[in-house]
Image 1 (cartoon, rainbow, N blue to C red):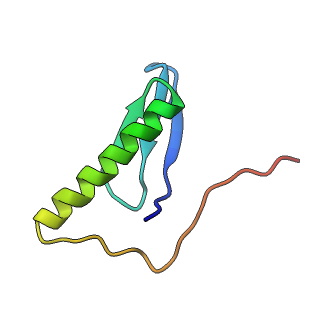
Image 2 (cartoon, helix red, strand yellow):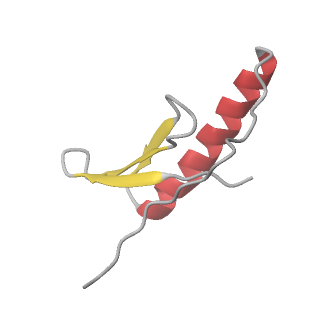
Image 3 (spheres, rainbow, N blue to C red):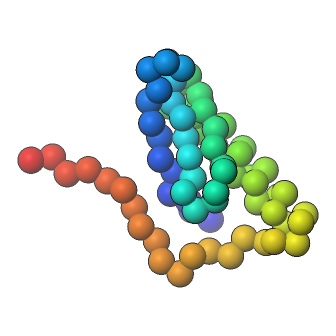
Length: 72
């Protein structure tokens, strides 16, 4: 399974905050980008597990969008 994850550097925290737009409330953080990636993977796994336990298994959206950047 693949999920879009948005990583934002938080200068106050001095690290990265990761959010998963497709999974409302699924967030994590890490002092480095690698740590944030590891932590958001754990958060996604936990989120999906809890949803399944409450009888709300994940069903993927029919569309996917990705955020990128273009340099000019």
